[in-house]
Amino acid sequence: MTDTLTVPSFDALRAALQARIDAGLLPGAVALVQHRGRTAFFEALGRLGPAADAPPMARDSLFRIYSMTKPIVSLATLMLVEEGRLLLSDPVARWLPAFAGQTVLQADGSRVPVQRDATVHDLLRHTAGLSYAWEPGPVQDAYLAARIGSRRMTNAQLAAALGPLPLAHQPGSAFDYSRATDVLGALLEAVEGASLGELLQRRVLGPLGMHDTGFRVPPADVPRVAEPQMPAAGDAVVVATTLLDVREPVVFESGGGGLISTAGDYARFLALLAGGGTAHGVRLLGRKTVEWMMADHLGPQLPVHGTLLAPGHGFGLGFAVRRERGLAPRAGSPGTCSWSGVAGTVFFVDPTEDLFALVLTQAPGQLDPLCDLLPNTVFGAL
Image (tube, rainbow, N blue to C red; front, side):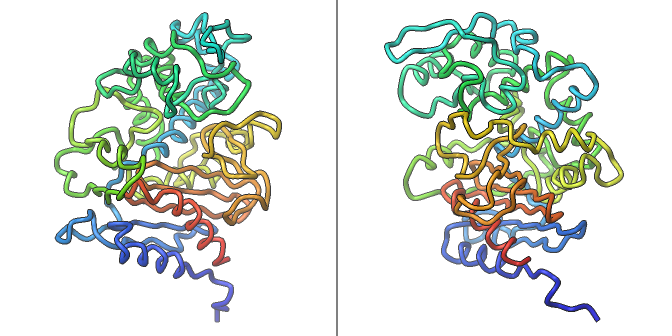
C-alpha cells in the first residue's frame, strides 16, 4: 500500500486560487503541476471572464501569456546556436544593420559611442542597453516618438526603428528588462529567412505538439479565450485596457510577449526544459545546452535595474534563475528557473526536484501575488 504521506497533495494551491476567485480578484484560473514525470495536478477553476454569465474555465482555455513568450523564443535561438548558424558572441548589427554605431544616453542629455557592440548574448540576458521605457525621461520620449511597440510594425520595422535610438546603458554593463527579445525575434527572422511565427511553428510548437499556441486565435477557438479581471487602480489598468486583441490578424509577432497558449501546451514546453531538451519523444536541444540556458548569466556583480528579479535571483537565457536558497520572499531551490506574463501567468521549473508548475489567469493586477503563491503552495506540498 502506498504511504499517502509521501505523495504530495496540491490542495493548498487549489484552495488559494479559489479564495482569490471568490474574492473577485481573479475571474478563473488553470493550474498544472508535474512532479517526477507525472501530472500531479491539473485543474480549471472559476470562469472564463469576470461576467457573471461567463462560461466555466476549462483546461484548454486560451490565455495571453505575454512575457512567457520569451523563453520559447530563447529556446529557438539556442537551436540555431547548436546548428552553428548563430553565435551568442555575434554582434546584433551583423544581422540587424540598424544596430551599428549605437550611442548611449548620458545624464546631461549627450550621447557617447558604445564601448562595445551589443551581442546576441546581451539580447538573451537583457544586457543590451535597451529598455521598455516604462519610466518618464529622454529614453521613453525617444521610444514614443519612434512608435516602438506599435502593433502595426513588423519585427524588421521595429528593429530598424529601435536600433538608432539612444541606449539606456552601455552594452554588457547592467541588466535592464527590455525590448531585447522583440529584437531577438527580428534577428531570428533575418537568420532563418522566415517570419517568427513560421519559425516557431516549424521548429518548436509543431514538434512539441503545442497546437493551441500561436500569435493569433483562429475564429473557431475564440470562445475559449479567457478575458481579464480589470484592476481597480494602478498602472496595471493600462495593461488591462489594452490587452492583445487575439482575434485580429497580427502584424507585430512579438517575441517578447505576443503568444497565446493553454496550460497543456505550455506544460509540454516546460517538460522539455525539465527533461534536458527532450520531452514527449522529441529532442529539440542537447542536455548541456539546456543546462547552459538555465544557468545564471549575470553573476553577482552586474547591476540589476528595476524590481523584476527577486532577491537571490540572476537571469539565464530567457528567464530568471534562482541563485540562493534564501533571500527571496518565496520558496524555491537554487537552480530553479521561472518567469511570468504581465496579464497574470507564471511558471517555474525545478530540475533538482524534477518539478514544474504553472498558473494561467487573466488578471494583470494580481501577477505579483501569484509569483509568490505558486511556488509557496507547490513547494510546501513536498
